[in-house]
Length: 196
Length: 317
Image (cartoon, rainbow over the protein chains, first blue to last red):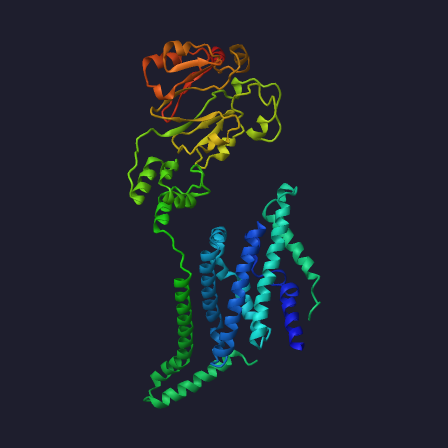
């Protein structure tokens, strides 16, 4: 029971309190680039969730079972990058096979998940947080992806409404998007301190 | 946690010591061995990881393979990739996909023209009939701002569609409004509004007909240019001659003088029309053009001469 509560708290923490997009400002490029339409944003979020879950878990396993025993922590970055690139390739093939329209809609953003800093950030943070069992790593990795999905979907929903709003001419387009992003971050600051 | 660097350097020393004890103890090879001793575990791990992923991706590739007709890419490569939508599909790639399934669609890419159609036919291994003149848009109005009459100044949304919804944006209900909806529709930068009149640059035009669809007054018609320059009656006014005269200095008044000169012309509903299929550069047509009292008959095309200025302005200058 105690363990379950820890996992749940960890999950809520990465989704809301320590959301990567809002508190660490990682993954800002797809957050601003693919948040025009809510359907596309959700697809992007799910693809990123899949990649974070897969690569977070895999990197934790590689780190805990291969790199640490061999004292090869120095090669972490390069190993992680190989794993993430592989995972993204896998997702790309999967999406292309089963969701061709989504594949067309993503265009260049799908392979660009490989360079999404949320993912490398997560893999490195898993070590900094001192994640010491596989289940925790899985939950935190999935949670991070879901946190990203939440962020990008909220942003897309606001931007869809903004398309109909009377925005002053000087603020149209990118400026209003950045202001929205800033306000959203402020709003999510409200969660700070809720979970240690 | 102990710093990682410290750990691995510790191991360097360790491994180097073992390898050195096995090999002849030369001072120069000592450093090399030290380097080798620290490098190989990292190298092997990386290679192992890379190999594992290569195998996984290889399996995934065979399992998740998408069967794409190689001809789709071939055809898409031939297309202009302008995304103009003249073919009726969302983009060039969608058209490439469609044309493979239905070869009746081969000639639909107007920007590519006969050239691209022929190449696509080559990919599909079919023969097509390439004869037939290129189709180009003709604006059926020749009035510039100075030639027109305005009852009031229009200050609304600066688009033809909006202005057309309002009565009285200009006196003539048929003429070009000059807000450039067609200019915005053109993907090839071939249209400009010159002194309130949409003007086609036939050197850039590909005949995709996007402008023709964009014009809310249906002023732009697609004409087979079997002659260049092509002659046309550049007016669409169906008002009677007196009203047209009052509204516009260069409008067709439907007098029928041109029809008397040449059989290719016909005047009905207060408006003369040229049968483009029957037009050829003959003396009769030339006379018809010159006899037109308002100068509504003009040449359009790459090498078109400038139209005759209206009578009123001639008198002034």
